[in-house]
Structure formats: structure tokens, C-alpha cells
Image (tube, rainbow, N blue to C red; front, side, top):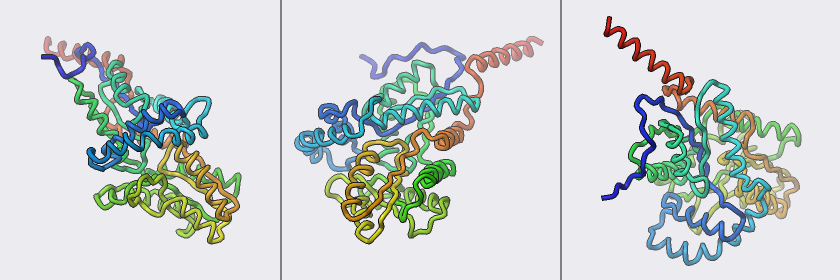
Length: 366
């Protein structure tokens, strides 16, 4: 009978464990083409965490209607933000992983840092395979989702668990569920806004647009809505704004079900119609600029606000690889690495163990 498990790398007794950090983001298609979007959306919209509709009902709709119509429309949107280096989300996610690795190394930590996408490439499974090949025995899973949601954070856990079903020997895992109220994260957001205002002046209204989820998730116990509101309150207090100067909205609604409100685009239209001439929009739930920020907010919502009578629209970019953000991310990682020896190199650990064994044998001989 064949084994359900994949072959393991050769085991070496006494091998010092390596520690890895898996920096996970949502994902992106490989190219701004209909065929690439069809593959990406098929994986994305098949996730039962994301779409909680019975499979017998949802899958015929997905494959019979949505994947026939939506890929071409989505490809055109991606094409409007695509760069010479590829998808902005992938570019920033890779840079964040590199910057995090450098920051942790400067702090004296010896770690292997890799980035992965929940949907698309590089996949979580492929990066965990790479960790195993490199001798990584302990993995800190750090997601690019400051606010916890079952649709995002828990979905990363599902993918890792699925990979684990095929492994004979599992690494030790730790998961960072959220950092929506982390002081460093809030400070990085505040510095981003202040730098923009130092150059362009302050708006009449600051709008914080978070990604939306179905409202039913709130009633079923998902903390996402509450964590978004806490992030907004902490940022408002840090910036010294009154409650009237900051508005929280939710974007990217999909389907006909009721999602978290108020919705972003209608809210911006209403602000313009009420006489607000200038708004600034930030997206604190996204740490990397992507389709939802660069196309949906900085193109579609901008157009809607100006068409409704607004005069000045500013989009404040995501944290991306700003130094304050990388420092905050590093601090979050170090808090959750506590108790794992990441200060010594593997060779130094092996040498210390050899010394301890020699001392132990010497003591017994005496």
C-alpha cells in the first residue's frame, strides 16, 4: 500500500532547528489576461471561507456564469495598474519580505523569510516545501491582514492545514491572528497620512475604506468589523481628528447579499453632494497597494466623487515598504518569536550542543 505522505528530507539527529517566517498575502493573477484571471478567480472563488454558499448551488453559478463573464472584465482592470515588474501586490509583498528579513537580521535574528500567496503563486504549499528542504523546523505564519477575518486569516490556516495532511513530519507552527491595534502599525499609518498632508495640506474629510465582507459574518461572530472600527478610532486619536473629520466605509462588495455598511463609493458620492470639496482616502486594511486600492479607489471612486461635485480627491498609498511599517512588522514578528532561539546561528547551536554533551560525558567519567 502506497503512503499518503510525501517523502521527507533525510533526518539528521541533533540537527539544530531553523526558524522561518511565512509572510502571506491574498494573491494575484500571473498576468492581466482573461485566461490568467480565469485560473485565479476559479481558485479564489472556490474557497468555502470566502463564499459560504452550498457547493451544489455555488459551483454551477461560478463555472457556468461568473468564470465565463468576469475574467475579461477583471483583466482590463488589472491591466490598468500592471507594472513592468508585474502585479503591484506581488511586487510590494516581495519587497516587504525582503525588508523584513533585513530588519530582523540587523536585530540579530537568524531566520529564513519567504512570502506566499493564498491564491496564485508562489503558493503557500510550495513555500512550505521550500522551508522543509532548507531544514526549517519552526514556522511563524504572519499574514498581511491586520484585522482578523474568517474569510482571510482563517483561510490561510486552512491552506496550511491542507498541506500538513500530506506531511509525515510537521514543523512547529505559530500563527499571528491580527495586529489591528498594534502601536507600531497605527504609528506607521499616522506617519503615512502626516507625510501626505505635509505636502498637500489637510482634507475636509478623511475616509478610511476597508475591504467589505458579508454582514452575516458579523452576526455569526467574526470580529473583523469591530477590529476595523478599533483601527479607525486609534488612528483618529493619533492624528488628533474629531469623529466628524473621519469616516469609515467598506468597499469591494460582491453579489447581491448585504455587506458591511456604509459602502465606500455611495459614501463618497454623498459627501460630494453635501458640499465636501476635498477628501483623502486611506485603506488601512491593505498593507500593499493592489487592484482594490489602485483601481477601485484611486480610479473608480475618484471618478464617482468628482462627477458628483467634489473638487479634490487624494488617495494616500498603502504602507507598502515604508520604514515605519517594516519596523512595526518586525516588532510584531519578534513578539511572536519569543521563546524560539533565533539569535544563534545553526552552526553555533550545534557547537554548543557538542560542548554540553562533552561536558556531560566528562562529568559522568569523573
